[in-house]
Amino acid sequence: MEKWDDLGLKIAYQEAIKGYEEGGVPIGGCLIDKDGKILGSGHNMRFQKDSATLHGEISTLENCGRMKGSVYKDCTLYTTLSPCDMCTGAILMYGIPRCVIGENVNFKGDGERYLTERGREVRVMDDAKCKAIMKKFIDERPQDWFEDIGE
Image 1 (spheres, rainbow, N blue to C red):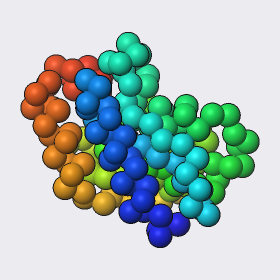
Image 2 (cartoon, rainbow, N blue to C red):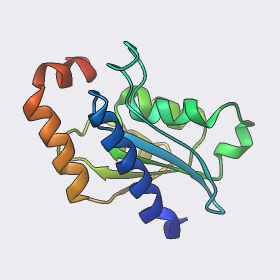
Image 3 (tube, rainbow, N blue to C red):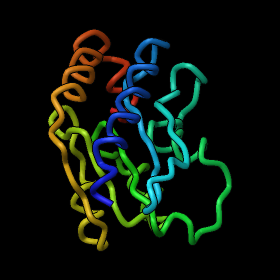
Image 4 (cartoon, rainbow, N blue to C red):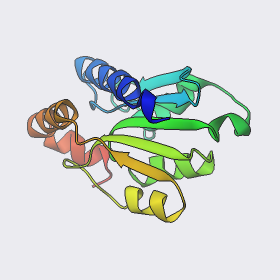
């Protein structure tokens, strides 16, 4: 699946840009199956939809629509930022075996450790663009960022 990592992260980053341009939190995601088929992508929509739960990863899964549980077992979830507890739970619930993360400098909860402990593969790309857009948002709107992560 590693051959799709650059594409998956590129799509996730494009989604993060959309979110930022819409006035939301710039976190994007993408779900790709083992054959390279893009099943869906999305971005954080908490502010745009006045939602408590539409983080980037959740929005991505929502945009994939209903799928058989077996489909998730052969996918990689791409996200521009280390997943929070809620998004980590969704990865585990659907049995997604692999998570590729753009960056974990601006936020790193227990999600990465927990995914690894539960047998999931986690790859952090340390992507400069992902770090830059997230830092820009946090610097511009710290109170909105703290709201997004429940602080």
